[in-house]
Length: 67
Image (cartoon, rainbow, N blue to C red):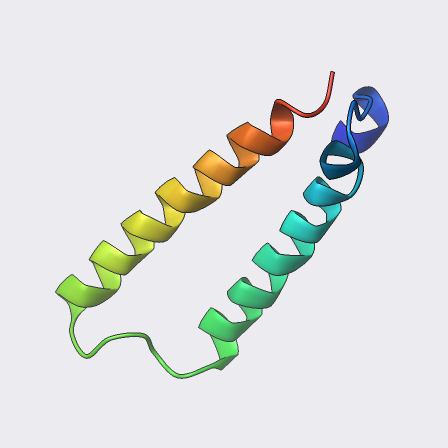
């Protein structure tokens, strides 16, 4: 729905969001089926927060490439 309701203004806007979604799906599958990241809860929670902010920042930048 997002890709149909917005129009890409650059090459990154056209293919970046699709690549970003595929990358998020791969990372999610790895977190579900792969080994746990970190040895304790504190390490896992900090890494989850950092990844959330990275993903939100990338999504914000990619959204700026679409109108």
